Image (spheres, protein in one colour):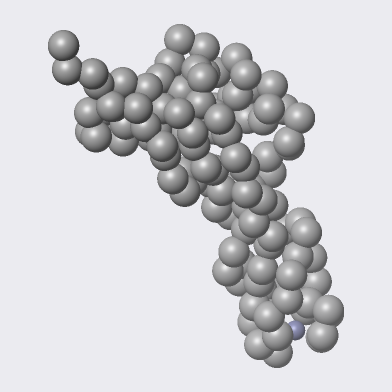
Length: 118
Ligand SMILES: [Zn+2]
């Protein structure tokens, strides 16, 4: 299941960032997932639930933003929304297009709890 790898990557990035900031744990995380990134929501939620165990993100509140796909047609220049890859241009029917948005898979922001000094 490809979502497990994706979740592991996100947790890695988040933990690195949190450590750099001297955090004790992550309270909240905002993630962006492009609709063209082939992530299945249910599988992602499942992978997340198991993936965060024993990490700094175990108790983090997760907000997921789904970014719609957007492409520009290389034939006529039309910019259009697409819900999956290789959709034809609605203007000219061409298949040659360049994806502008929708492949995102990133951490938008983190809210952390800083280490308490004893
Ligand atoms: Zn076109």
